[in-house]
Image 1 (cartoon, rainbow, N blue to C red):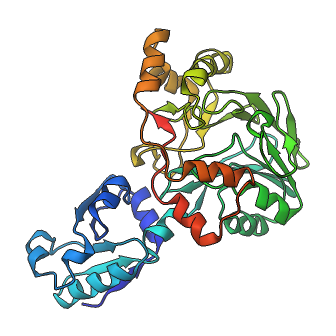
Image 2 (image 1 turned 45 degrees about the horizontal axis):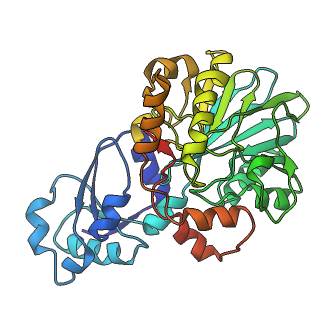
Image 3 (image 1 turned 30 degrees about the vertical axis):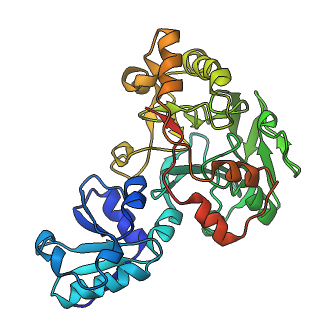
Length: 375
């Protein structure tokens, strides 16, 4: 048998289609336990590369003989070496091209809808990080919300669609991934919008994104209405697009709610979070489709690969929206926080323009899952 590469895009398709796959992850155990390729029907085996340097004989009995095996490591090299040994043993085996670093950076657009007055709405799904970003297109213009740092995917998609990106927006100052919003605006000559309450300490010019702002895109006047919704950060701002979609940033997810502690102010911001979730959002139409900035697990993906759900459904099924006692809500949010994102403070400083790490350091800073949710 010969060893074959598997591109991140092919792995993403398998995850979205809920296909079966056996993954041999040869990273160290702590790295595997912290973060791995997620798939509903994926099986896993973790054996560190250093335990396989002298051969794979000891694990052969534990590997399937009737399934393709995908070998995964951090950057690719170790998985190629182990994969070649397995192929020599007659197994059908592939390696993840570019390793977990490439998996972390893979983005794919999913069409959410045609909009009522013309135009389209797309969600960009970053499976390796659980990040979600958005592009609104109308006429010859486009707006991008919560862009990741890999800006080429947005500019290439805009060129394909024949539009110019005139606006980029961040719902809040991100702490788990590096924003591409400012860079994308500079590349396209557009305007970068940021909530001013999250912009204290930034070193660059931006357009203040405030409650009630209306940002129009294209000839058909698709309104993006800004709704102040603090709780994850003090400046967190949601968007209502076309009267149909609620972009909640990191305030509300499909199966969880946002954490209020990444600026070290959980006790101060937990009440803001409750007010947003239990009052501000309650005043909105429960027919709005919620489009968050992250998801936590692959079971939140729909059959088309999108992450979306009606607000009314979330008020019935999301536990974080059904804690009526305020003291219990405060306890749940402040005592059930997941570990903080890797390098979150350096990521915040990067997003404020206070530090400028090189591209390799940026990749390293983002390694690992998103941890923006309280379940």
